[in-house]
Length: 142
Image 1 (spheres, rainbow, N blue to C red):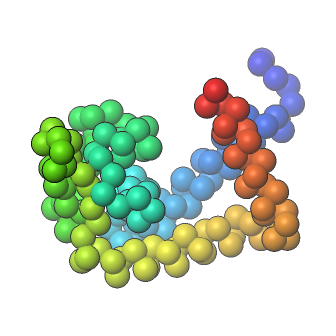
Image 2 (image 1 turned 60 degrees about the horizontal axis):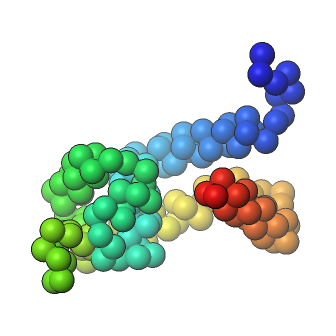
């Protein structure tokens, strides 16, 4: 056995991430979305117009997977792709206006999941948790 302690940081982080994935999947299913489409919309809401390859890197998927995802999202009228004006090989991805009402609904879903996950933590503890996780993330990016 690698580690006899069930409460190591990597194991607990994995379990928390898994529970979040399950919760998100259940919450976005009524909107006929997948977690990946939801995450894509959330990323684009913060950085609308990013390149398709930048989006693939943020989602940690390969080029063929992102292309299929973008095609499905275009078919749902959630996004549209435009060739970059400086480099026609680069596709920029934008949220369509038709998707804005859905984004408002997804914001409520996100708030609900966040509130449930952070129940019992003070605002300071929530801030501390986020800052500590960002430190861990940055350490692993090195």
